[in-house]
Length: 257
Image 1: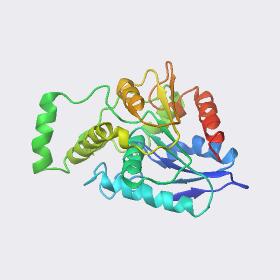
Image 2: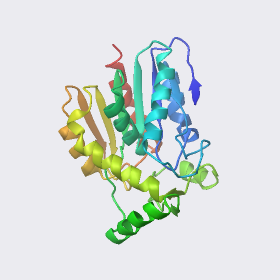
Image 3: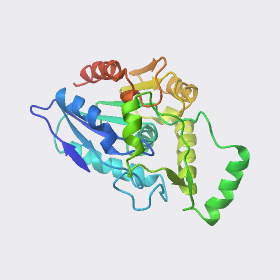
Image 4: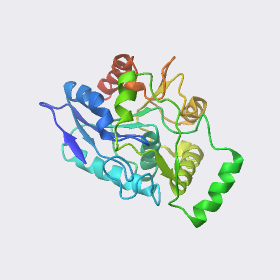
């Protein structure tokens, strides 16, 4: 877990990264939050980044939920308004955490939350994975993800980053798909917390239709969905990231109290 502090903080953010990445890829976003007057609490999820007990593997999605709760508890120590921001699989993990833990937060921002995949495994691959999950759950296979951003600088830095996980286990895949199904099934049980979804219009990873369907079923009194045309999966790493942050900033400031 890492904590970045600012002077005269207005609130604190708990940031949860996605799959195949870790906290270092959030330097720009962290600095923007600090500049706007927010402390930031963030760590690397189990099996990812600099925290790989077993690279690309988890035994249960509960591991994500438990560690996010610990980050939240650290944020509570400031006795300031708390916001949560989760990207992709991290967004899914925030959803699962809120469904289970009902954490008290001022608002939640989900960036391209993983509620469906643009290119899911074939039925044959899925059947094979069912068998492998029982026999060799830690077997790791290449992710072969589509392009996540149009930012050439970010793509270039990722090429040489040895901390980026490029293979995930069969068990990890099953825990991910189970969490997605459960999030849709329990959508009406999501706590009544202000929510903003930021979605790339040309996301090649997450199925934006599934995201919008989940959003429409939410029984919240304060929810917002913003889609950015032409943007890829990582909206906070796209060339238009300043515009994306401006939208997020407006949501944050309107929910400080």
